[in-house]
Length: 148
Image (tube, rainbow, N blue to C red):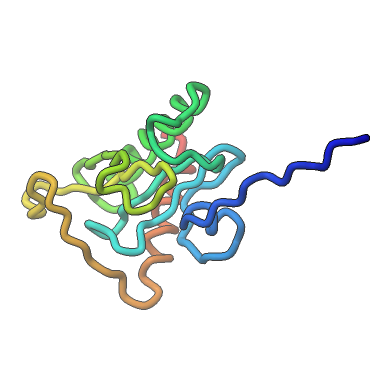
């Protein structure tokens, strides 16, 4: 007697839904292990979320083999934002369970400029005008391809 095939668990969080093509997103990077896309309610325009494509709930569940790829892409995005958007630097953060609105690990990479008004951990949110999110995504995609 053969065992019945076990279906993989399908998660319904935003990241998994984007990966399955159920939700649209302004994707700036996608490969077998990683997805990076613009937050639809950014702290500042160009705010990128970097996630593993494998469902990982939070930092405590991140397998060791994904640490370097996830943080490596976050580092590349942080380096791309000044070239893409004229930012002076970035804020990089991971909410872990508390304040984690999406139960799929994601690293926030937020473009920063001196005097931009961001104070501590108060994250005001903004919105993109019609069509603007894709223009920001294209600038960041191009900067990520630049091998400088």
